[in-house]
Image (tube, rainbow, N blue to C red; front, top):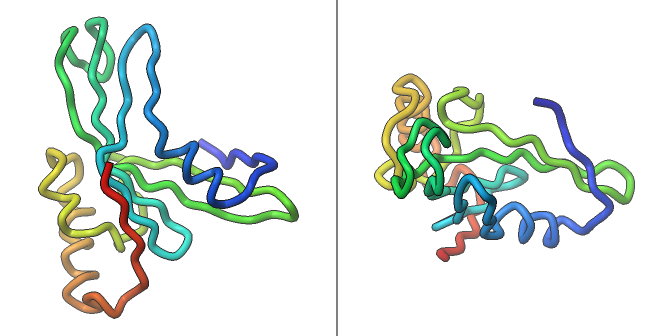
Length: 131
């Protein structure tokens, strides 16, 4: 998937990316997120209303780690959404997020652990919000 750009502020884009969504197929809720530089990490709980959404039966839920890359271009902000299963080549995901979602990519998680072992808390500034 490519980048999507919108005429909005960075803060508004983050609010939109972390907003709860309701569709006929399911419910999407960001249960925690952290902004590290221009990478928005989120743990998203998806609950199926109908069988088949993400392979779930109706009423079942799954948590997924999202990596939204953020970028400014002129007076627009863009984002590119990735999920753990796609092995995003970014590793600053907060370690506590790994315990909140089932493993989708062992190699990516190992590199997240390596990143934190190498850089620790000094690796980047982190802003965190729990929902």
